[in-house]
Image (tube, rainbow, N blue to C red; front, top):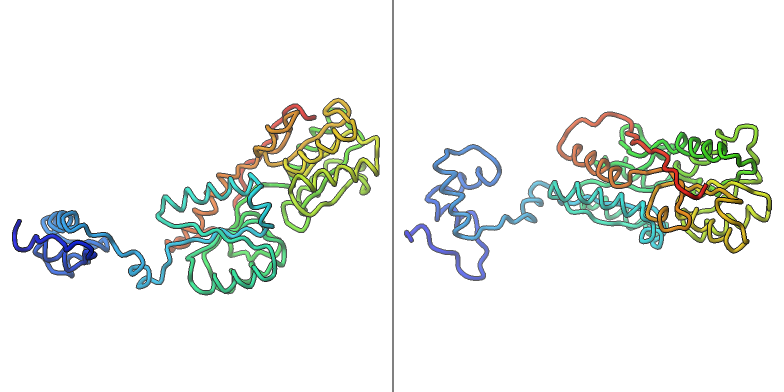
Length: 343
């Protein structure tokens, strides 16, 4: 070992100076290599060998401080904590986003907004520079988070399209209205005539659009009394909504549930009432989540490509962080009907 190739002392973090000494070059030359700049092939080879010898590990925190980057992206879900854990659709979006961010060497930070206090806390967090961008899931129209992201000019992407989303902020999702209309028409084609809907989360664009699609499919057959509105896309809301529909119309023979979890709750309520599915009542859901194949019978539903949606949202944030131009507006991914045994 030469005098310039002294090993780093145990317990001491190797520095650029150590690499320069081991390679016999200046610290400026080492810095150019570490930052992707040009040096001669000979110098680069010597520096790469020295990095291995001294055990150099880049100080990402220090570099990010200089660059004013956190190397993290927030994944913000505007739902109750329980729904965040139980909803497989949110889980799929999260996994897709995380895979894309990890591939770009970004950390994903999960943030759940379930109250005004959460909103205030996360506003402070986003304003503090702790994340470089954000993916926002389940925002409602006029949600404070829309204004926060816009005022900070934070690179971001929304999953779904709140009505008051600024046009310069990109979004990704599916055509909830057309998909809801298509599966309702399919339900009607089976001869169902007293068809109701358990309409969840109508304060979000997804819930409002699914209700609008249902209404459009029924046309003159639409009956306002056969719409049971519930607040969340979850099992208990589905069971409650189905009991409401049965009270209003015991002869009901078809139900469009606004999500698979809601549909699973509806199936439970129908079993309790002694109604057979699909013989007496046809039931369809939405999402094609794990709920769809856990139920008996398996659910006819609309496939929502949750993982792809998350990946696409993350990619849009990363493109903004790289300084790329993002087309205005959003991207809608395919959402075909998947017909099974429940209708």
